[in-house]
Image 1 (tube, rainbow, N blue to C red):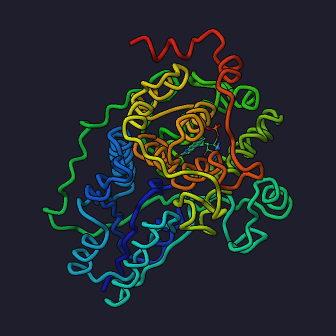
Image 2: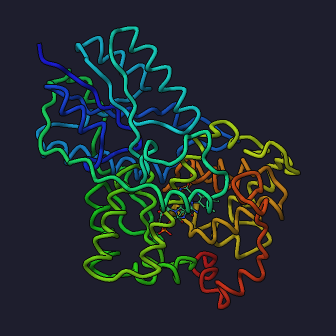
Length: 429
Ligand code: FAD
């Protein structure tokens, strides 16, 4: 009898450097690459906002279409089923004798619980269920600390990691895959290009799947060498080249942070190494840091008093104030411009994310978690630990040794939008 494995894709939608896919192909004769399109979970309200808004859905749709295409080129397919992981895997394990389900490790508390639940159900049926770390630049088992002793402050973490850990080589990209024939009625997801229109605004590149991510990285590094100015430009507010714009692809796992790391190293060897080339990797380390901190504090990041357990933050939730902020109708036009950009494109620069969060928390005096939930719904690059970690940081309940960041908006506007160019871009309608 042929050995069959299932790869349960979530936010690791790529062929390259993907341990789950690689191992599944190695250990089985046939593989079912699966993605579950779970409407109920996507529409679930969190502080009044759906978990996945229309922009991220459109992007996800595009990414799935592209993953299906590349898997087809290898001789297989991507099975996209409507429903939740448990229901769909139950159907699959009833139809086929499955040896093992391969999936990535999660950090979000609900996703972790879902995986634990799946593991229990499947193991009772005699199906193996294994989770693999595929999201970070440094592999968790290569860190010089255990998860429970990850430092709370980034600088401490960075200094030790940079000295004592190395980034692994990439896991090989599969060159072929064999998938079993599946019941026709399972192909109920339409891989059509409808519903994939994304408003690019003035900063986002063309978004799609893995190949699209490779092209953009190559453009940013080798074609245009924009990376050479990264450190000086990364705080700008608008434009294609001021920062890497890799976050949407990182969020859905279309590109691996290890791949970016090794490409930057190649650029440094073949072209130039400077402070900016180092700084891009430094920022990716922030991403790792938040992810590992989440593993250490899986519940606390969603709580009002965060990982510190105590603060003067309040749980104020005034619907009118929150709506005005989200709709870009506050008394501050600098903030409004950014909120309008976010609403139209799912995007906002790092600097403006900090400022609108500071305004929400300190000027409007609202519960920071509501702001984080709106970002979760709206951001095209939403990533659980980067989002909730950064919000907690600004609210002074996260990994900030200075206990909170209230920004002086007048000063910030003077420094970053003196001529009001950014505001004019978004307020003109
Ligand atoms: P670059 O400046 O080119 O950086 C390269 C990569 O490094 C980014 O793609 C990202 O993966 C990582 N990175 C950079 N800055 C940070 C940071 N402060 N924290 C963690 N990782 C970082 N980033 C997300 O990817 N998803 C989110 O949901 C998210 N929510 C945020 C919410 C708030 C309130 C704030 C202040 C920041 C948030 N960030 C989030 C971090 C940061 O704003 C974005 O990663 C960055 O703007 C993405 O643009 P880029 O890819 O051009 O970044």
